[in-house]
Length: 151
View (tube, rainbow, N blue to C red):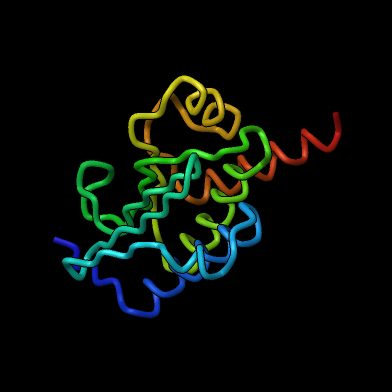
């Protein structure tokens, strides 16, 4: 069995990145972004949660055996933005891919996506609602953005 340990620096990197996203992309103040809840009950995973109005993010980070046994995963349990089609989802996934690569995560998974989210996922290279490798997702986002620029 693989022994996954997530250290404090790794947790802090995810928390800081999410704060920067909330301030820079969603337009909240740093004080509002500091209301992110971080729960860490075990050394092999933690959760981050932010909810203000229609902006709603809930991430599970670490060893989630139902996505990929004994591999590190980033799971988006809830994702919603007050402004749809504004690039927030793509921007968040890009940031999560950067962290995923830096800290050697294998998979990203979106739990129970609604039809609108499934359409978004398909544009970014997800195969139905299955987990996607961080590397594959990063490449798919790059292709998607290059295609958007050409149009």
